[in-house]
Image (cartoon, rainbow, N blue to C red; front, side, top):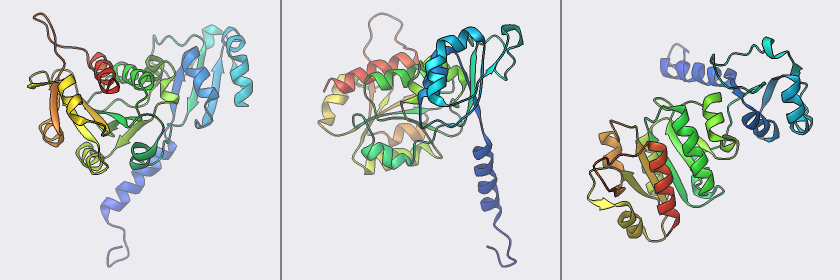
Length: 262
């Protein structure tokens, strides 16, 4: 408190942000994404809108969730999702998932001692694909900054093909500080950079048995300077031919495979 009893401006703004987050909801759509959300006990579910055809396909999941669905005609399927989204007659309004403390998940969460960090990767389709790969290869978490990253959306969930419900997607206030915290926990951070001297296999081989954090930047600009400086090593994925660039989600899958081959 200030001398006059008023809260400092930064405290007021922080509390406002927390209230906004508490009110935030997300519409997930598509049979697969909706089914996985309904079956996820971690997920707070608020409203379910389905066509009769979709309800027949989701009957078991709806029953397990205990929700009362709103059954509508296909032409009256009116929920706040992007026009043209392939919803398959099913959409559910939910609260964003809360996976708990970043440090707790990375230190002792389920999965391998392996995490993926995303620096300004904002395309929800890329992040959804990365979440799917992270689940396949048993990574402990995918980590991104709260700002300049892909939010939890229906498009992301649909691309993740259910992985959003099972694979921790952690948002941190400051990516560099989160990276330093991981290093303090024993993680070795390998940043992906097409101009690096080390190959990915060499960088992974140098780590030994220590936990690994794979750091990937946005397509085009790549890793920010501060992010690069905080990495323990920079590595490239070797390529043949004149075009040496992978989509960030493909690069993540290759990197996760390399890290799990140790």
